[in-house]
Length: 87
Image (cartoon, rainbow, N blue to C red; front, side):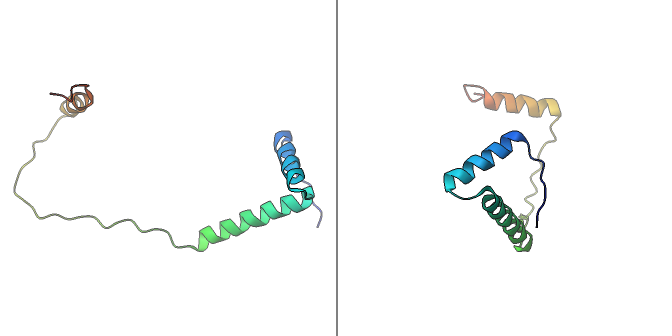
């Protein structure tokens, strides 16, 4: 089937150069690229997604952690990044 594609000039030049380097016609090269892209897309849709790890639940220790203000957290982060390590 014939069709017309409107490609940006740099993309067309790259396609033409790559097909010449491979020694194949532009039509064959573009067909191969499209088939590979569609196969990759189909494989991505059919493969199961990786599951997130389950949350870790720890036993309560009864130790209370003080609530810190944003300013206190910022000060801790700045001290941690200091060249002397906040010491």
